[in-house]
Image (cartoon, rainbow, N blue to C red):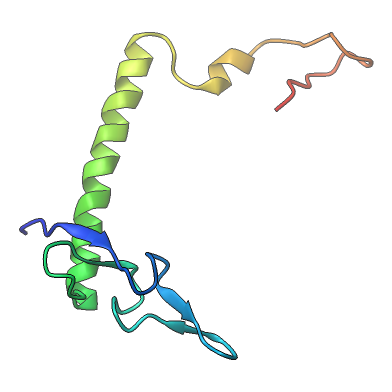
Amino acid sequence: MTTIPLGRCEICLGKGVIQGIFHRMECAGCHGAGLVHKETGEALEPAVMVGQLRQRLGGVAGVIEQQRQQLERQGLAGAAKDYAGQNNKRHRGGGNWTGD
């Protein structure tokens, strides 16, 4: 699938909805997606938009997984590791409150 350059819909300012007099309505300029073809400004068909967003989501998921693996190799894999096996005795009762 070819990646289509996407840009913000200028009618709804990327929100996908516009405020009517009495209620909110789906933006007709982008079919409620908030995104349009960047070069032409035309709305993509919903099926095409779903494919484009799925393709981008898959790419981002791959980048996140690579970064997670890199952090694991460096021994910095997540906040849970920081809190495991510790007891914060700095407040009354000596519980495990961490301030989060």
